[in-house]
Length: 285
Length: 248
Image 1 (cartoon, rainbow over the protein chains, first blue to last red):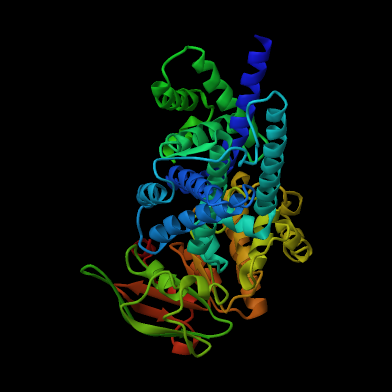
Image 2: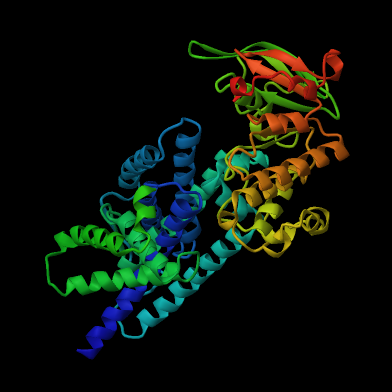
């Protein structure tokens, strides 16, 4: 029994660490450049499809990480271009890209694509010790991404990204290309999300075309929890993602069929928004 | 310095500016008054590049900048808005905002943002202003009063001295003390540095004391003009017989 709980906790931490990349991406798009980005769902799947295809083609599992990130960045750039150059609403532009990426993912990795044995960076998920190794690997990757994002947000570029989100006129007044910075923010956000998709596929050992369903909700819920821990940028982004997986794991104890999982995820975010102290901000945005 | 030649602008059937031409020289402080909807802010929008004119040209130092975007004109034209939140970023501190203003004439990089904070701002501007702003450098702009925000926004706009300064009712939301402080600061800066300045206001007292030229904009044209080069009366004389209510 104790061993089972221990495994559940490890599983929660692993899933939480994977989704913390999504939470960081959603934080960058929705809180820094203030762009409600529906590309998240598509770039998560796209990162996974690229990963599965490359691993099956014989590429090292570690090398799939940068390729997945580039794929996600491209998805973000396309969304940004549709929004800034073709003047499409931010929700519509993200939706268009996510819809298009569904076909791209089907072409790349079909509806299901299992990875060859021992081909993921996590090596195996069956033994007792290996999940700890997986957590160490993931923790390192999350730490690098977190520090990278922190450095970015404190840099001159970060100041402009924040200004583009909260006062675009100010960014124009200092001669900065608002569209360019929006696209940059979306590219970084979606590269993080695609990295999560890459790791998700490697952790599960297969790609599924429906694996990305609910990603945005998980990212948003993790972000809401993160903001309850600390309203500004901080380690709360990672803790929020883990906490959400923990809450979700508790609902599994109700022993409902897996088909209800997404309904539970949707219900959880509604509950979280209701109890979030500054929920008005989130609803208005 | 600034030359406007035959500018016209229509919004649907509304002819906001009609074949407007003028020039503003170094040392000029032009005050523009007129009822709402007469094209004052549209004129500033056209000078700053926010709006393109239907016809006509904008020149700065003899160079046609009509086709230049607002972003590219940023180092030539500085503008202070009526909305005290538009000139700065509310979720950044004063220090971060001032650091960011130094990026007007160079590319942003991965360097720590606040390292660009121009230390001389403290001795050159903040201490002489006696508003205690030098002790609030790490306070978020959103937590400041409207007057404090406008002062910081003004300093941000002049960190890289512009060719022309546009003040678009910058004191409309401020209390009289803050308004006086900001305008005197702006006037002194413009005078000392010889930067041509244009100010939109509805306040006759401000107009009376600030400008060396006064224009009454109405129906898209400069209906009345007072100033030295027109060989007419001084702006101050205008106020002896003006009907204030008609202007406000």
